[in-house]
Image: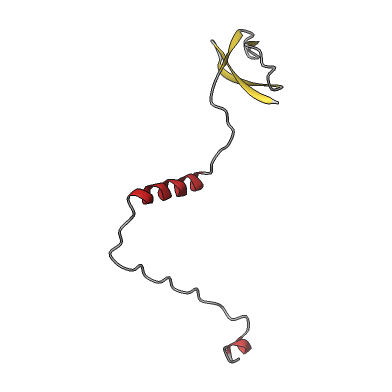
Length: 94
């Protein structure tokens, strides 16, 4: 089944599902009963997540104009680990 888009002159755009290749050029609007014409639009084949699209854009930009740094970034602080038991704190560390 494929989703086809139609435009009603009174109610606007709406979608109808038909088997692939079986869509009519005109259908009846379910809201008002008027004749609605088929609208051709870009297919929704894939949707790239926004975070992935941003990463791809950054990669493409850095290929031509890489970011220049003036100093080494600071080291991240290691996370403090909580001891499970006070007795474990007295054990020798590897």
